Length: 524
Image 1 (cartoon, rainbow, N blue to C red):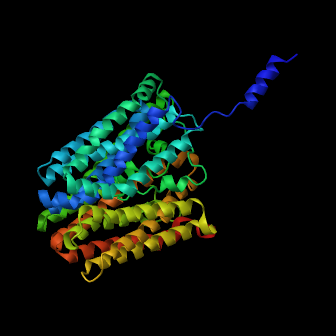
Image 2: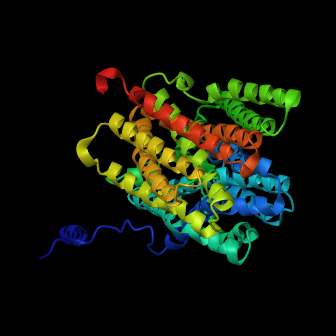
Image 3: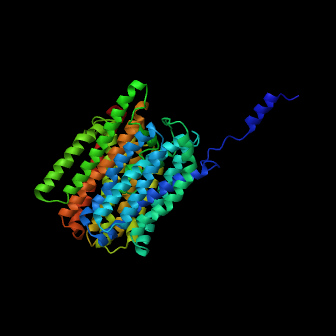
C-alpha cells in the first residue's frame, strides 16, 4: 500500500522546478511594460544626440547645445534621490506614476518647443521624471518578482538598453529626415501609455500591500553583471540621464534608496526624516549649481564670473557631502572607484554629444549616417562588457580599468582627427568603436568594485554615490565643453570641436592615470 506522504513527496520531487521566467502568466504584462519603459528611455537618450544638430539648426540657440544634454542629467540627480526616499517611506507606485508623467510631459514640451530655452526646460522636467521612474522600476522588481526570477528581469533590462543602442541612432536619423526632429520627442509618449497600462495590475497590488523596504537582491548570475552594469547607454548620452535611466549596477534599485536609513524605532523617525530632507536639499542645490555653471558659459565679463562663482560654490559645498570621504582627491580604494566612474562617463559623453554636430555641420553627413557612429560604440561597448563578464585573459581589475581607459584615450584621439578636413570620415567610426570598447571594459568594472569594496550595510549608499558622481561629472564637463564651444566661435569653428575633443581625451587620460588607486597597493 502506498504511503500518501511518500507519494506526495515523490510527486513533488519528480515535478519540474518552478519557472524562473519573467514572462510566465501573471508576470508577463508587468515585464513587458517595464521593458518598454526602459527601452523607450534608452531610445530617447540615444536619439537626442542624433537629432540635436537639426534641432539647433531649426530653433537657433546653439549656446544652449550642451545644456540641452546636461540639464536632464543634473535634474536626474534630484529624481534619483527623491525616488528612493519616497519608495521606502510609502509605496513605489506614486513616484513611478509621477516620474512617468513628468518624463512624458517634458518630452511633449521639448517636442512642441518654439525656442531652445523652452526645449531645455522640457528636458529638465524630463530628467527629473526619468530619475524617478528608472529607480522605482527596480523597486517594483523587488516587490513583485520571486527572488529566483529577479536575475532574469535584470538581464532583460540590460537587453532593453542594448537593442536601442544598436538601432536607435540610425532610426532616430531616419525619423529626423523623414518626419522631422519633433517626432523624436513626441513619438515616445504615444508608446509609453500602453506600457504603463500593462503595469497597472501589479501597481494596484503593490499599492494595496503593506509598504516595506525592498530586500537586498543579487541579480547578477555569471556573465550578467557586466552586461547589466555596462549596458551601452551611449550617451550615457547625456541624456544619459546616464545614471538615471541606466542604473550603475543591478543593485541600484535598493542602492539609490539606500541613502535613506530604514525607519526603525519611533525615536529614530525624526532623525531619518531630517537626514532624508538634507539629502534631497543637497541634490537640489548641486543640480542648480551645475545649471548655473552652464549659464555662466554663455555669459561674458563680470556676469560670467558671478555665475561661475555661484555655481562652483554650490557644487563644491554639496558634492563632497554626497560622496564617500576622499572621492574628489581619489583616495585609494572605493573613493577612487567612484571618482573613476565619473571621469569615464564624463569623457565619453563629452566626446559623444558633439560628434554628430561635427559630422553634420562640417562633413556633410545626414542625421542617420551621423547617428550610425553612435551605433558603432554601442556594439563595441556590448562586446567589451561581454569580455569583462567572462574574465577574458584572467586580468586584474586594475588592468581592465587601465586598458579600458587607454582605449578611450586612443579612440577619442582618433575621432579628434576628423576635425581636419583631409582625414576621412571613416576615422570617426573607427575611433568611436575603440572608445566604446574601452568603456565596455572599464565601466562595469567600477560597478563590480563598488559592491566588492562596500560592506553590506553600505552597498546601497555607495552605489547611489556612484550614480551621483556619474551624473554630476557628466554635467560639469558638458558645462566646460559648452563654454569652449561658445568662446571659440560656435559650431562653425573647427577649433571649437578640437578643444572639446581635447578636453574629453584629457579627462579619459586622468582616468587611466588614477586607475591603479582603486585597490590598496598590496591587493594589486
